[in-house]
Image (cartoon, rainbow over all chains, first blue to last red; front, side, top):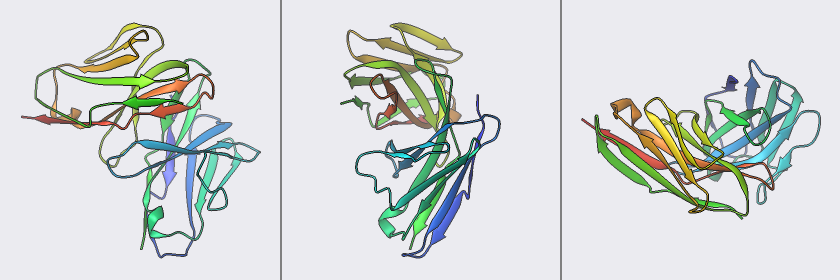
Length: 117
Length: 110
């Protein structure tokens, strides 16, 4: 499997500020990483696919200018929530995928809980 | 499109067996996965069915029937630590993306 870390684990910020979340693949070179968002007691919703060295691919309804993704190396992807508002408060989880279809498996980071005041 | 349905909550007692069902609608998929997530934690992979039938991994088993658009996760010899949310997820063949169900919260009681 792959070991994935995220930093920070929790962050509280004021409305209008920007927050950067890091996702690191510790033992696997990931050309692709995924960013999910999860509200309490809800499912994981894919926000975007982060591609090393190129632009991220965003899911329908996700604002690319609000959720900036940078995948500068094979082990690091960052998600920046710009001008955060209380409705952006959520649990953000990244993942990496090993192998290829149909048996590729995703390994998730521990998540970052964002609270916007 | 793709959609998955699971019961929102299931309660069982320690030592018992519980089955969490998942029905789905899809235009095509590679397989059905199951993930466990403890409160505030990361989802962890439990099982994957690419073909119809039963896959067994220790106390956990997963089943898939493509003709019935149905799968389930079976947990045996329940332990208190099994209290968590369980998600079924299918990998769409047109996009390769993982689509998650809404999750089932399992509460194991003494």
